[in-house]
Image (cartoon, rainbow, N blue to C red):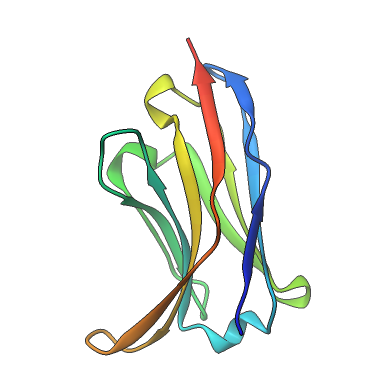
Length: 119
């Protein structure tokens, strides 16, 4: 059983920073990629950032230059450093681990952590 456990969500003022952590129950090299998604009330879940097993990163346009995804392989943990937060960043943030190729894969999800940005 693979578990992903997020932490670090909080209430923060606009312009502030938060760091989210995602601890995996197994070696994160087992995943082809890991990342962060978010879901705001009344909206679909959307991709925020991903990082491959080789360290290649990808970001949603609205967070480029503000968010940084990273991984600590020794701790089996993925991070999302969020700076210059905006009220529109308010959402439940979910950690994702994907195993498989581009067409056949399995997604694993954490339980989510709430990020609220006040104006």
